[in-house]
Image 1 (tube, helix red, strand yellow):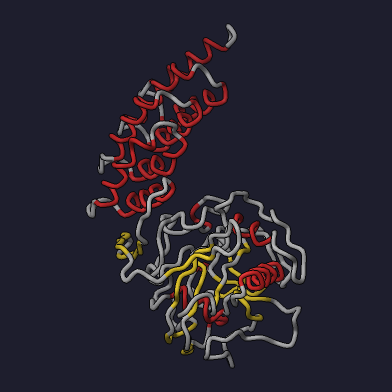
Image 2: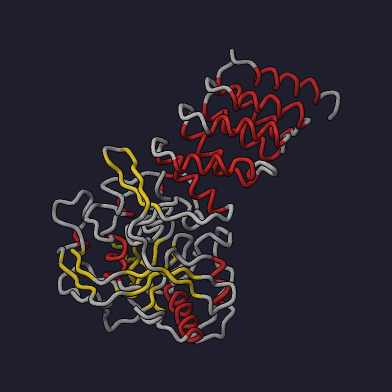
Length: 415
């Protein structure tokens, strides 16, 4: 660090350490220090001091945590600080959630914090948002954690373990696939939205009863990029598949930038290789599986929150790893609201007049017509993520960073 830079760094550190300065000025000073990258020992002690002070602004403390990730301070000192914050139920929920999400990036810290995550998860008096982040973090550490479901009541999230536990299988016939499938029971449901549903649309009406006569298997998560790559390596059936089509890259992120034709090819390759009847879900199968015997706007209630789903209000501006929010629906499915739109087998129709009532795909004679998408995405409003919402304005060759899919199977295992 040059002679000119040292006084500047000391000046910025003085601002950062002074609690008489405004939070905005201190945060600006820290952002500049982050770019200058001064001596990590000198800066880390200041950052840990900020982290430990509950009176400091949450955004400043979160930025301090972000910078600490980059300069990697002494893990023993940091571990003690993070554990203290985690166990303080009066501290800011946003900060505690951020700490849990970032645990894996701190070398030597995650092992010491694991017992504390278990303690948080088992504490029924702990806020649901922090307990759910503990579920996610423990799974990333390789722990087997039961599925949890959520319900929003009076703007408060309540969670419980999923019971009964749904039957599940893993498709292992393709190397590197590890496709988790959940058994969806047979049953009846009311498809579409009632006339008085908040944000309901004419395209979702008339509401009508549909019978799903046989149980089937559905992907627990949207297809990931790792799974896509595994199937893309199988012999071609009808068309080429780009093994890396996605804008947001990551093995455990949902695959996106795939067309309806691409998704069909994925299913065809998987079905041919495994000799099991994999395909896209019909629109009725998708909504039935999403609702999972609920009648509310979302499977977790009448409202949606960035703590439970990735949509426009989340401010993430991209996809999140499948299962990131650690909330399943009552059938054991994840990410049914937001993250990526999911292709269905059906052709688009303007409403449900004349729609099938047996759960079958509703097709036309025009193979080039619009296809159905369900579930909303990271880019969608809360309205577009409702269980009843239908989107049908993408042609079968359309691709974008918010279009993905999940699969169903009717002959994978004995039902």
